[in-house]
Length: 316
Image (cartoon, rainbow, N blue to C red):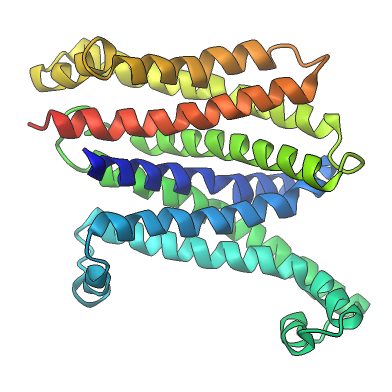
C-alpha cells in the first residue's frame, strides 16, 4: 500500500529532474538561442528534485541507518546498486553543470556584497572575466553539456531496469528503458514550464520569459505527449496480445478493475488534455501551456503509480 507511494514518488521526482539537464544541455549543444532565459531555472530544478527523489528512498527503507549497507555490502549483481551508482553520478554531474556557468555571477556577488565575502570569494575561484578565463569556462560548460546527456539517459534507463529485470507481471518488458526516458523528459518539461510560470508571476519576469518561450516548450511537450502515447500503446498492446494469465490479471486490474480511475485519468492527463491544449497555440499561449503542464505533472505521477502498485498487488 503506502510502500508503493514512496517508490512512485521516487520515480516521479527522478523523472522530473530530467528537465534541467536534458533541456538545457541539448538546447545548449544545438545552439538554440531562445533557451537562454530558461537554462538556469532548468538546472536548479534538476538538482533540487534529485535530492527529493533520493530522499524518498530513505523513507522507503524504513530504517535509514541501513543506507550504509549499500556502500559496505553492495553487490553489482543487483540493479538497485546500478541505480545508486548512476543517480550519484547524475547528482554530481548536475551540480557541476549548475555551478560552472554561475561562476561569473558569483564573482559579481563577491564584488558587490559586503556580507559572506569569504564564501563568494572561494566559490568564484578567482574569476576576473579575462578572455582566457572565458575560453576555459566555455570549454568546461561544453564538456559538461556533452557528459550530462548520456548520464541523464542512463539514470532513467537504470531506474526502469529495477522494474524490468524482475519477473513480475507487466514489469518484465524490454521497452521499459526508452519508455521511462521518454516519460522522464515529458514530465521534466512540464515541471519546468510550471516553475517558469510561477517565477514569471512572482518576480515580474515578463520581459525575459516571453510567450515565444512557452510556445516552443509547448510544442516540445506536445511531441513528447505523442511519443509517450506511442510507447504506452505499444506496451499494453503487446501485453494484451500475449495474454499470459498472470499479466492479464494486472492488465484488467488497470483497465476495468480497482485501478481503472487512475489508469483512465492518466490517459486523459497525459494525452487527451495536452493534445487539446497544445494543438493550436495561437492565442492564450501561456494559459494553455500551463493547463497542459499541470495536467502532465498529475498524469505522470499517476503513470508511475499505475506502474508500481497494480503489479505489487498481483504478484506471481
